[in-house]
Length: 184
Length: 184
Image 1 (cartoon, rainbow over the protein chains, first blue to last red):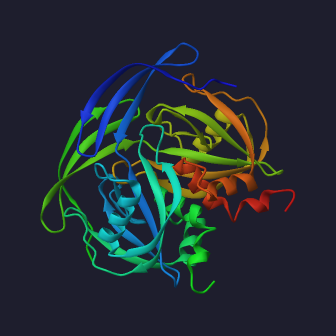
Image 2 (cartoon, each protein chain N blue to C red):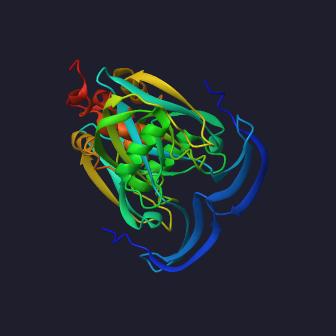
């Protein structure tokens, strides 16, 4: 078995930005060789799969400049300073969909792309939803989409959902959603 | 409904690296306001879920410097220049696990983190495996882990798999793996 560790020799920042910082770490590998790792620092985020008692899920369509496409995703957002992931889940759900959830269940977390970034997304299932008024960020434009849980699962299993956090949340919710539906 | 588009006004590169480039796009939003988007360019990658006829899956443990942790992942790697995703899947599977697969099935693709990067990962299921000699990159140290498909599914559904591409591949493989097992 490999020991699987990398000893950091040097850390050099290349970019300080609004959402990300970029640095190059020089590391000593377990065989003594020296290599570099590019690291995109991100403060972390939260994503929430909202499912009402009738089995309707609420996702958002959003133009994503990096991929030059509209992507279908569960509501999500970056952690504010001093905010817990749970508080962020409550806030982002309300801002992006207007919903207030009676119950928010922790599903787990993912590293979106650990090869070059430390971004960690905490995933939640939100149920028993009460509608309200959405309030997105001023530079954020969204379309809300209502999709049945059964249909969403099928889309995802067929590879038709292309957002990584949305796939992870669906997978982690598979055994949990049924409990919250009025028609079990 | 929102039109959901952003018109690019300016593109400014901040960093050119080994695996990533970083730029800032200045965009005009649909309400006429101007904002900026940080974009991490990545050439794309491939990830492969290998399952043999006895239901054994083969994953790798790898130290990931950005998160300072060992992460359990399906075999994966970046696309080489001129390489198709399918060719990359065959190559990465052999390099990281030694296996040659008689059948490689396309599962779909994900954007790992479309909010700040264009990284796209093509996902595959590899079956009918013949063992061989692994040949990882010179700066890559891995431990191969054998996990039963049933156990892997359960781990993932419980939120115990923390790598985004691995979760997506498991979800997209759910309805497909059974067909390739000798004990159906």
